[in-house]
Length: 165
Image (cartoon, rainbow, N blue to C red; front, side, top):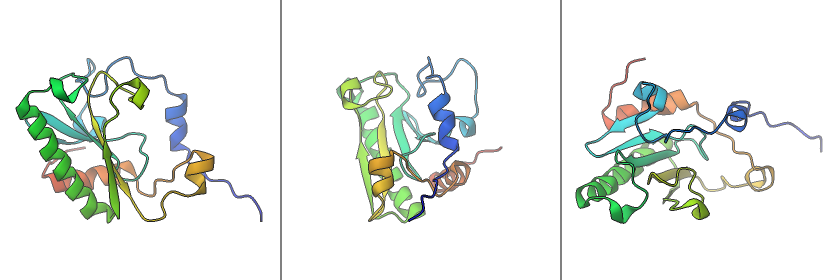
């Protein structure tokens, strides 16, 4: 069987990029629009954003505005808002991606795989039956069939947000 390449050139941007010095979940010293930051929803105490380097189409993160590493250090109101937004994001992702399931979780600490261990955030990753195959396991490559801009627009609409370009 002839070998066929799998092209994912967008991934090279991540591989060649310097890791940011600033926390990606905190407001940057250089102002960016919510669209540039991929924030699809802003709540009172938490927000929802697309993962710029997703594991699957629709991979979002839910984070509090407060720079805090552990769930137990958040005020009860923020914890409640966090769970409500995770629930909203779950429902919306299931609707727009037609996924068969979701992985939902937080990596607490570097040993658990947290890329930004000082700012608590939860990942929601849509999953489909049969989506983990040899490419992911052996090639450490994921194929994202839908463009981030398209997913951004769909999620923003479902959250009731309007973002201008």
